[in-house]
Length: 191
Image (cartoon, rainbow, N blue to C red; front, side, top):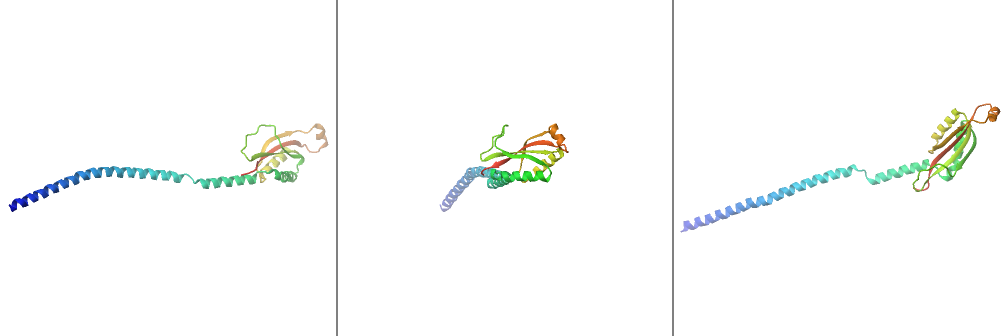
């Protein structure tokens, strides 16, 4: 009896152990398969995040770009003309002409220009200066080159060269032309 009881207990233990082992194997299968899927999804998501992070790092920081734009605007503002500086600019233009031996007939700022103007951003306008002088072709070229060397950026809007009348040619020893030059520079009111 005792042997039968021991056999029965060992058989019960073996059955329970087998059932537990089966449950562990089957349960592990039901647990590990979803875990593997979750691990794959997690790895894929991490790779996507790493790619997006690399893309974000490639884009320059907006503050740096804003600072660069502000510096460029400040440089342009320094190279542009303000209406208060027009007398000084006219003085520089006159000085350059006298250095080159060019006779200025007239030099004046012009408020309105008849040709079309592109729409300028807010706070920006154009200042126009008309210079009329007597010079040879060579002197005119030297004067235009001298304008390039000034610290302010000028745009030549109009350049016309006329031959003086025959009476004026007889009066003068040199054959000089009458040059009308319309130049402009941007005026920045505010940044």
